[in-house]
Image (cartoon, rainbow, N blue to C red; front, side):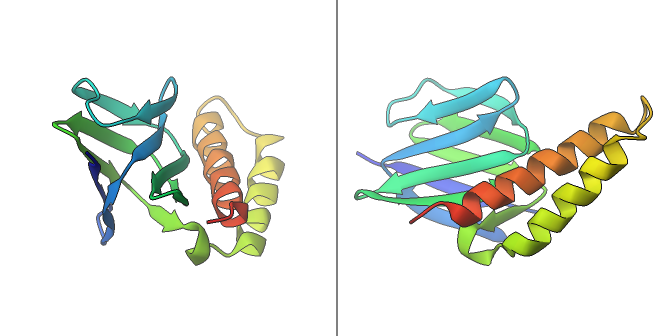
Length: 132
C-alpha cells in the first residue's frame, strides 16, 4: 500500500506521485507519514519535504503552507516548492547571507519574515545537497 502525494503551489503542481513514506516540516516539528496515518491537517513552516519510493528518496524545499493527510493521500499546498535538482545553491547561499545581515538590524515587526527567509534558504541548501 502506498501514499498518494500531491504538492501544489499557486503556479504549478510540483509533485504528484506515489510514495512509501513522506516527511513534512510541520509548524511544531517534522512529521513522518506512512500508509494508514491518522487523518490530520497541519500548518507547514519552511523546510525540507522528502519522500521515499522503492528505496529512492527525493527532497523539495518548501515554504509555508499546510498539509492534509486523509485516506493514504497527502495533499500539500505551499507558496513555493523546489526539487533539489531545481535549486541554485549559490543563490540560496547569497539569500541566506543577505537575510542574516538584515537580521542584525531587524526590528520586532521584521524579525519573523527575515527568519522565514533564512529558514527557506537553509531548506533549499539542504534539498540541493541531499542525494537522490
